[in-house]
Length: 433
Image (cartoon, rainbow, N blue to C red; front, side, top):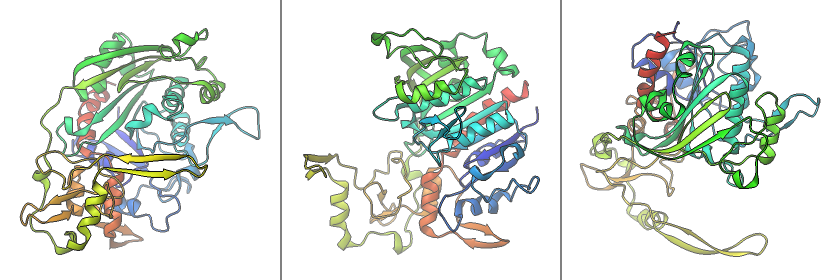
């Protein structure tokens, strides 16, 4: 099988860079990156600077446009579909114009992935999302992920998932993300895995367990998509969303579904096994290993701003009143100030570098003064090359990305070495097709 990839919600190219580092022959046929409502598409133009544009097909498929406006039939054929899509409300309803079909809320990007799956049927899929995906929404735990699994089941895919703390597998950041690996049931890989015990796939034999070895497994739960006769007392142990054969099931899930997914699991033909697992960890990277010394003055915190930073990072209990008049106490715990250099960093957010509680503040290893992390340090935390986000290619001209956007892009990015880890196992799988 030829190693061809389509990358959706590509950001600045983390999936592609992670696979490129293997030098195993992956070719990207097309990518899509679009930031809604933004005049300048900085992430897209950074991607183009490093990798170039992908070809137009039939004058309709371009990378510089909203994926919702792309005719999915014109997306190139590919063996691997990748994407880091946001966690959103995946609830659905019947389309207003017809009694057939479903529609999600406008702008919800899972449905764009589903449309590509329907149109192109790629044999393999590798996706990334935030860890809370498995528990959202708060009032109906597990519903959103259940809708995703049901969508895959309807289209004939098996699915593995795993919540990965990148620092437990050697990274410099305690970034927790959900990775989803799906494969079409007609692949050689699916036929081989169908002979394996489901629990062993989660524990040691599956794609995720080989990519991210497990030390212990506990709290195993099973569920059956097709189970129709469910009792109230079993609601937490069985997945009851009818059959996997029609869109009505997705609508039923929107109204009724609740299930407690573990941080690892496997779905085959609608049957689910899930568990909470502990990583067989390796030594993490430490913040001091990627920190620069004696950086430019612009990164240092001014003396007069220190009280504000100390307050933001500290514990708080603040009396508040809601719009309805309800009185309550808003509380939050302390954040280390400064961030310790002898540990992996906290998760970096898109607000990094702003005067914000979540922004990293370190003691410069050279001067000892408190400062923000630099753009290079932000890139290193995510496993990108230094200055990866410095330049963009816009209409044939190289321009520098604004400093603020460099941090924003890194806050949105994934930890590249995690893709490389999975890519090694994926190469073995594809080689056997």
